Length: 374
Ligand SMILES: Nc1ncnc2c1ncn2[C@@H]1O[C@H](COP(=O)(O)OP(=O)(O)OP(=O)(O)O)[C@@H](O)[C@H]1O
Ligand SMILES: [Mg+2]
Image (cartoon, rainbow, N blue to C red; front, side, top):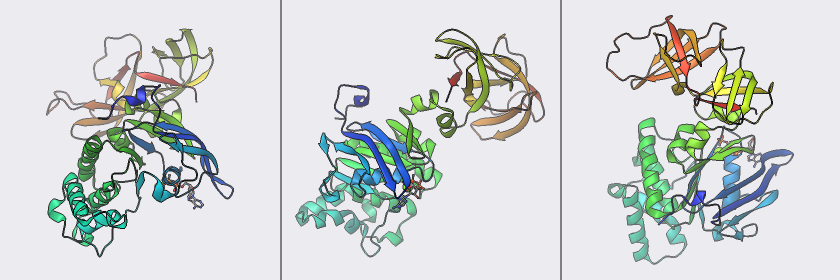
């Protein structure tokens, strides 16, 4: 069985070691000195905007591109001179190309036939894979007779058919609508748990990365900005870039006015009338320029003045977006700063709903914010 917490065990030898890998195309650096360790049984996501080097990194893992510098070890073995077909790796491409003239079944079995597996075993394996992706009743159809989501699952079944140890998925769910996407995300996690395969998934969708992954690497301009579990990356982003890219966040620029020890800090920001008093890890001198990052759900909004004395300010409701389970408020502070606040809609009709242009109070706790210096 997969050891679900193996990536927290620093002594365990990682399954994949990417060591200082750089990829240049002419003078252009697509992947810039990337180092990563990925453990067996992980569902590891590479998350980043378009053009940041995700596919290029995946292609190097698959052996379809050669690193300009650095090396990649799989299971302790340097893969530099191992051709793609000899690697225990399969890749599902960004534009997963199914063979249009073949049935679903034949598509799934394609790689097995290439490998000259005995026909009886091929049939059994294809059946197993179709069961896994719940497409048993579609075995005889051609890709054109399937929905986009079903096609995607055929591609997934095909890439799993050879029991690869490592499966690289490039934007595997990009073609699906929101609902099917969520459903398939859960299927993917199930498949991962059933097969124990190590998955590396490329996505530019942060919600998807959060849902699927054991860990996420946030990439930008060929560089890895942060690696961590979904909650680490969300709750403790290490830079303004990661804070902003993963989910929505309020950033208040300011400077440190007091920091008696590494766990308590006071920050003054021109953007808010009050000082931020936070219990956050900070090792910065007084006067250091920082940003306080607070997620919208960590700020409370109310019509009545909250009881707390610190970390409280006034504002005026500028926008309200009703989203069913929650509402998003955009609140304008006296200096003009816009703050985003989300609040769950707990009752069907709020007794005194907060309205547009209404004066409100915002408040947050000492643990609500992260202090960022980069
Ligand atoms: N063969 C190539 N020759 C030259 N430049 C390339 C080549 N392949 C990729 N690039 C460039 O390298 C950068 C990274 O490309 P890559 O395909 O890895 O991005 P990506 O993160 O997968 O983006 P997307 O989310 O749009 O798929 C891009 O600027 C791209 O134009
Ligand atoms: Mg890509």
